[in-house]
Structure formats: C-alpha cells, structure tokens
Image (cartoon, rainbow, N blue to C red):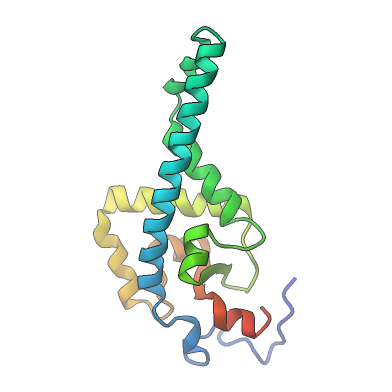
Length: 166
C-alpha cells in the first residue's frame, strides 16, 4: 500500500520530474557507475562460486565438477540482482555506492521476481537491440531505460528520496 495522498500524485505517478527534479539529477551517470561496480562484484562472486565447485569436485571425486556445465554466470548474476535489487534496500551494492535506488512508478519497492525480470529484460534488450537502446534514457523525462518502462520502475537518487521518508 502506498501512503501518498492524491494531491501529491502527478498524472497518476508518484515521482514527478517537474515537481522533484532532484530525484533525477545525474541518475544516468550514476547508473553507469553502479553497473561497473556490480559487474566487478558479480565477477568476484562468480570466481568464489567456481572455487567452491572446484573444491566440491575434489571432495566428491569429480562428480561436483558437472556443475560447471550449468550457466554459472547467469545463475550468480540473477541471484545477485534478485537478492539485492529486490531486497529491503531496493538497490544493488553498486547502486548504493552511487546513491540511487529503484521503485515502482507507484512508489513501492520491487520484489525479487521483478528485480530478476529487470536484469533479464536489460540483458535481452541490450543483446538484441544493441547497446544503442540505452540512448532511450537521454530522451525520457524520468531518465528511464526501455526495461524500466516495460516493468513500470524508476531509478531515483536515494538521498532526496530518503529526506522525504519514502
């Protein structure tokens, strides 16, 4: 349930870029910075998962090495995004370092399922439509990318959002 009165809503949306431009200042560059940090962290967790499987393979006389046949990167990345972006802080560690958070357009935090879908649609759109699809954010009034629009999410600056206790 949202706790916003109808007078606050602008065109059915909680976060109005005209009324609150500070929520969107520098969001695209912060998203890029957060993506780099998260890619490094996912690489670290992928290395850690590989080492665990390697050690398990030694203990199980090679049987656990069949786990290397799994799409390990996809599993680690989706778990990372679902547990962090869909968690109570509504931001990955990279997003927290960059000072941004995610919300649905009605103001609620997203759950792990939407967070995983957010990552899947991002990777699908970038791989099919080329990275040029990211230019959509330059022309969106709320700095939303294509996968944000499809899922009804918005990336906001965490500082101004926290000051309004939302």
